[in-house]
Length: 293
Image (cartoon, rainbow, N blue to C red; front, side, top):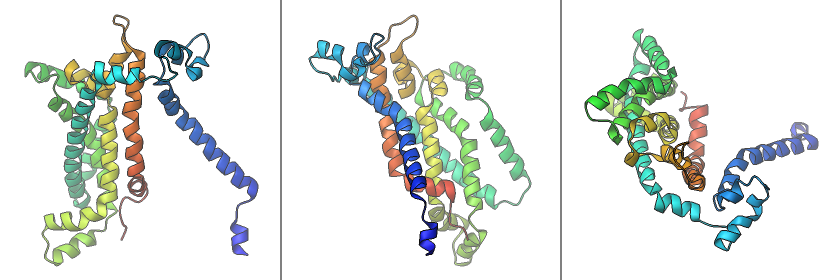
C-alpha cells in the first residue's frame, strides 16, 4: 500500500521525463551543432542565404565532392599546428593543478586543525583576493616579468594561475577538512603515527572525493583561461583558448573561422570525457566532501 501511495502520478512522471529530455537537448544542442558544422565549409555553416545549407552541405559538396570534410581539422591541427597549443595547455594544467592541490591540501589541513583566530581573517583575505578580476592581478606581474625577461614563457603563466587559483583551492579544501572529525587524527597519533603519517595514511584517503573535486575545478580554471594566458604568453607558447581566438582573426588580420570551429570541438571533447569519468567523485565531493564522523 505504501509503495502505491509513494508512486508518482503518470502525468507527473511524463512531465519530469519530458523536462529532463528537453533540458538535455537544449544544453547539448550547441555542442552537437558545432560538431556537425566543423565538418562543413564556412559558406555552409555560416550561410546567410539559407540556413539549411548547414544541414545539406551544398557548398561543401561543390568544393570537396562530399557533404562532409575534415579540412577544418586539417587546417587547425596540421597547417596551424594546434597540437602545440594542446601540449602547452596540458603542461599548464598539470603543474597548476599539482602545485595548487599540494599547497591547498597542506594549508587547508593546517587551517582546519588550527584554533587561532587569525584563521578566519586569513581565509577572508584569500576570499577577497579571489574575488578580484584576474586582469587587475595580471597587470601587476607584467612590469617585473618584462624587466626580468620572463614574459611569454609557460612557467611564469603557471605561477600566476596558481596565485589566482590558490585562494579558491584553500577555501574549498579547508571546508572539506573541517567535515573530517579531529578524532581520526588523534586516534592515528595514539596508534603511533606522526602528524605527517596521520595526514597521509588516514586523512587523505578519507578526503579523496574533496581532493578530486577541487582538482577538477583547478583544472577547469587553467584549461579555460583566456585573460592570463593571452596576456602572459607569446605567440609560439599559446595555450588552446588564445590560439582559438587567433584563428578568428581581427579587423586587421584575416582569420579562418572553420579552423576555430574545429579547434573548439577538439578542446571541448576532452572535458566531456573527464566529467563522465569523474562524475561520481564530483557528486560525492560537492555533496558530502568527506565521510562524516
